[in-house]
Amino acid sequence: MKLTFVGAAHEVTGSCHLLQAAGKNILVDCGMEQGIDLYENPGLPIAENEVDYVLLTHAHIDHSGMIPKLVKEGFKGEVVSTFATSDLCNIMLRDSAHIQEFEAEWRNRKGKRAGYPEYEPVYVMQDALDAIELFRPCGYGQRIQLCEGIEVRFTDVGHLLGSSSIEIWVTEGEEQRKIVFSGDVGNQNQPILREPSYTEEADYVVIESTYGNRLHSTEKVDYIGTFTRIVKETFDKGGNVVIPSFAVGRTQELLYFIREIKEQNLLPEYADFEVYLDSPLAIEATKVFTKNMKGCFDEAALKLVNSGINPLVFPGLKISTGSEDSKQINFIERPKVIISASGMCEAGRIRHHLKHNLWREECTILFVGYQAGGTLGRRILEGEKEVKLFGETIEVRARIESLKGISGHADLDGLLKWLEGFKKPLKRVFVVHGEDTVTEEFAQTVEEKFGFPAFAPFPGGEADLIADEILSEGVRIPVKTKKPVQKKADAATERLLSAARWLVEVAARCEGMANKDKAKFEAQILNLADKWEIK
Image (cartoon, rainbow, N blue to C red; front, side):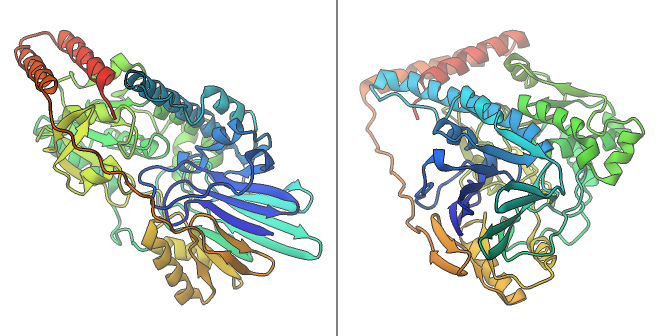
């Protein structure tokens, strides 16, 4: 009975843990790493086709995003999750596959001219479709016999629609152990979703530590009042409020808040203001939220639903699906709210909106979720003065705001409260899913507060759950970063730069041109830049 920590060990993303018990190989989560990779990761210690089950805590890509890769490499078992998680993965894994294919096509278009070998996508759409076919959803609270010797149960932890902690009962001969994986524990007093539920018994607990050394504000956060103020102050200056938002979860919360603002007429000067939801994934995810209202919404949201009100829809909500619709948004001169993914600004349409609004002093970029280290969102939030988008340097002159407290993760107190739910002492707590030093800090806090051992494994760390013994702390070899080679500009480069400056002059003379023609010209320039941009 062995537990191996494959991913999200001393890192926030890439959650993946291998439980080998009762003759089966079980993955709890199979997530994609996002942002900077700090440590060398040995990967799975077994072949992908030897995995029997994947138990999925929730649908976020850093927990689910490598399931199609697992399938591509031979996995043919079952993926067990809640119904809402299965519904969300149906859209999110397809979206992820589309991103993988697009990136591969882009790299190969550039690399072919340079003589580079062909870049293979992490996985393709068919892999995602094959993965979706393997999902076996279940309801909250059902105790399911996975196979002989292993039973599981999913419990709502209020982090995301369908999110769960997972209880696993393992029997091997005379030995029995219960392991609980926290998943991502939700924050308190969040809109739409229920509060985190607690589990009373376990031998071992694997717990996340995203906010394991931090507290959310002790003041009751007035989300609606703060958001209303930011919108009013930005609109008064004639600017746009641009919100990089996670397509699943955070976007729906924002829609919930904005519906209340409009219903209560909190912005009478801009009563008919428009909100552009510019993310195909967020649009599909909102439909999934609507489908799962009865099983996942909290009492306040259900009250609206039962009175015939969809809490995620309001007058002035504009849905942008096609790329042309997306491009036109920034040529609408009236101040507006733009909600677009990705939440950490690493990909997606939000990067185009940042390009159009970051340099404008009258605009506001409003962050509403966690920004992992190394991501563009984190760099902007920490005060970077210039960023590069589509090969162009953009000056950061917009007002940068963060809606404090609107986090889907429990803070330090919330995590400790979740651990307090266990009525008997635990054999050991394994701390994962946190930034490098945070995992160690939280492990120490757990030991000091509760008195039982806590261990923060590195990638590949192993534990024997029968002997209650740490077999390996894992690999703590930092990933080496390559330094770019500086090259002196030659005559051809100077001519190219001269031509580019001429293009800028041409663009500057287009002030009187119709907006649709400006948009067409801009699209041609962007396509040209994309065609020749080299990473």
